[in-house]
Amino acid sequence: MRLAIPATVVLTLYSAAAADTHPVSPAQLKLQGHATQILGGQLELALPSPMKLDVVERSLSSHVTASPRDEVKGSFEFVGARFTMMAFETYASTGSNFRASVISDLPTQGVDVERARIKKLPLRNPLVGFEVIPKLPKSSLDANVLIYAAYVARANGTVQVLAFYLSSEALPFALAWTSLARRVVTSVAPGRNPIDLKAGDTAFGRYFVITRPDGWTTSFRTGTDDGPIAVFQLSEVAPLTSSSASCALQLGAQSALDGDEKQTGAETNVLGVKVRWTESEDSVGATTTTTIDNAWRSFGLVITCSAPNQDQLAGLRQMIGTIRLTGD
Image (cartoon, rainbow, N blue to C red; front, side):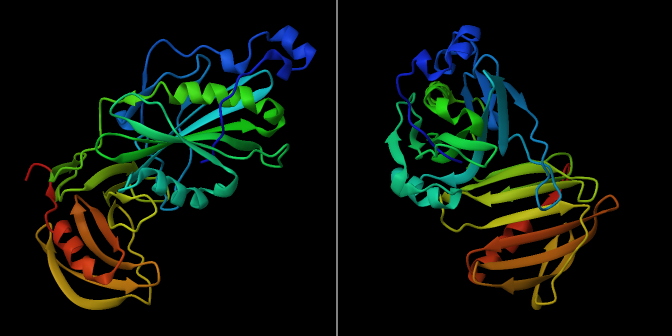
């Protein structure tokens, strides 16, 4: 993610030849007349008319594909420049001070806070947000450079990030593209499908149902050829940059327990089967893992839960104990 500031843009930003061929500045490009739902319906916005949303063709490290609920990409080319929007679901909350949370998160995104400008955005109620405007280089070896970003929060406190990138050869015209990015961001409105943070039963497709506590959300990803067939994620929604707990249920994955993990003696019932959990702990936090053979048809289920400290693992195992087959 990266950020930049809007400004008045004139055609003199272009060479005479470019202006003759393309008399419209990027800042003046029309937005589509209809709203587009993004991030599984968390937000809706008006995209630039030439922009198309793409499937994010990217495998994550766990051999699963990116989910449209997690991220979405849109791009187009104009006057020799490539303009790209990336939208991310953070599965995090604003915390007690949203601006302070944004400032704390920026270094983790590679943004130099000392040289960035952070301003509150004029968004439609009940949305709140901040734009981040980084100091741009005159040139870059990177193919794409972040020119503008926005942190947006819904009424339930969940945070989404919109980041806009420009191909490096177009950096001399970044001001015009930044203006376009800000117009897109200020068109944002609440989508039809907010993340549900209330306690209750959640179905993982046609496979399982689990009961989650307040303040937790779920997501689903499909697997790749060399990975599980599906991954179900349960995430505790905590303030940006703070540690939180999570559980990943990988259907069809192979168990790969590390030699440093130890038998804790903890046994619980999952899907009617008594299972033994292993545990490990390091400077980042604590992890507990178990495997259930033939959890769904002939597919095994590898369950891994992580928490900031070891004391929280028992509660996560208790939550996993509520899982049952769909239709049970």
